[in-house]
Image (tube, rainbow, N blue to C red; front, side, top):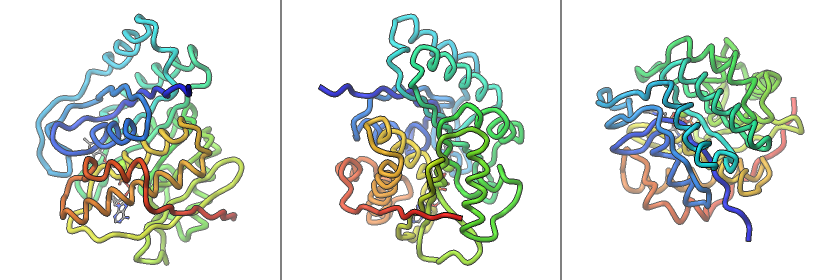
Length: 290
Ligand SMILES: Nc1ncnc2c1ncn2[C@@H]1O[C@H](COP(=O)(O)OP(=O)(O)O)[C@@H](O)[C@H]1O
Ligand SMILES: Cc1ncc(COP(=O)(O)O)c(C=O)c1O
Ligand SMILES: [Mg+2]
């Protein structure tokens, strides 16, 4: 029988609604991965509501919890680490310590870093030390990085002029260390307005994917976390990087369709669960080059 993969997911948890682990854990389980959620914050709700209660996990808790799993002899079973929203650069460094510990026990373990930097225009951003940490330290260790356009711009220190420029920027990030860069959301001058575009860049090639841009009165939150989580889950289940990219885009689209149909602000993950596991649509990625 094929072994069920194990994935350590280090990101935020919200009591109400879906962001961070609260957006990614259930979908990753639903597609067939054992998830070990390690919550970097526990907030009442995501920060786009403008108010919340709760606390940030002290950075030392991250290695403490990883050592606890080592002490019961299970750490070597970890096949991948996913990290998302970071409260501080110290928390990020604690995650890299955990990743190094896991890779020493299982050299095949993968690390996906979702370099969450927030949405400055929505009043949510991360300290400069966190963006510096992500570019200067995390990129060198990560196997996969999944920025959105704002995060890619921040890494590049500029905005793109065209689709090919986005590709050049993603390629530049690839040279920092990751095996693949998945750009979860492209934005550039001249982009077709009614499509949502994504990019996957690896040493072997580059792929572009389009799906419909759906209208929402308020943009749903947690979409990026869901995308990264499903991509990594499908890679662990044996998909090629391109197949995992296509799967994640298709499953996320299904969740957004259900969310739109329910006129819900929070992602409708429970209602969409069967379509997360078996998307009815399949968006195909097409190869592009500079
Ligand atoms: N197909 C879609 N139609 C409309 N909006 C979308 C679609 N897919 C994602 N979004 C929204 O676009 C924004 C950018 O998505 P993305 O960069 O992937 O993730 P995030 O900002 O959540 O990390 C998010 O606000 C998300 O809710
Ligand atoms: C607590 C928390 N975690 C994670 C996120 C990231 O969500 P997204 O996937 O939309 O980037 C947010 C966004 O507001 C958040 O408030
Ligand atoms: Mg995000």
